[in-house]
Amino acid sequence: MIEHMKKIFTGQLEAALAMLNDCVGQCPPEHWDGKIAKYTFWQVAYHTACYGDLYLSPSKEAFRLRNIHPQGWKEFEEEFPSRRIEKTEILDYIAHCREKAGPAIAAETRETLEGPSGYSWCPFSRAELHVYNIRHVQHHTGQLGVYLRRADVSLQKQDALRWVRTGWKDDSLLR
Image (cartoon, rainbow, N blue to C red; front, side, top):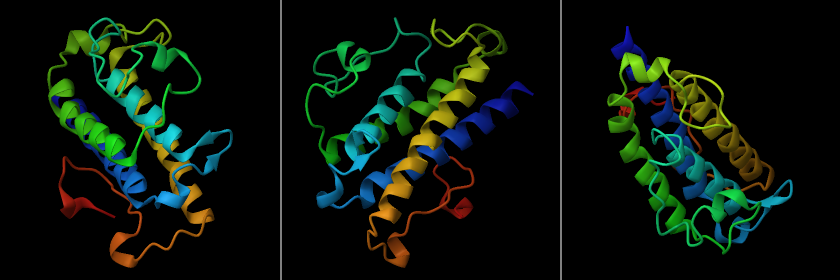
């Protein structure tokens, strides 16, 4: 059963990250600083990728800060990033998350999945953290997708934002 659950977590997180990647990739330059509530498009995308990456680590202490976090943990603790993040940087960061997801989830055991999340602000099991992470990515991806549609971004059929059902980089399972 544990292997089956890990396959589900991996497939659904990959689907959510693929959809996030589509939204970021489709955002035209003139909408990169467009507002979604009080945050810009890129800030929402950056926040989503940061926490997606963080929650794939066993704990805050095990998390490896990257160059995209120029001020370290302050980037997570402050409301706004310390600098404007460019589209290519966020696409690269999403690619990093997609590469990290499979091995990170595959490394889980029954004991780790039943154990604590690894984050004091997430008082639930590690298994539930994976569901929480998927929901978080998909929530913000939905915001980005709605923004693009409301901004009337011209999305050609072949480039349209797609619904990804499941699958580890398996395009046969799209839509």
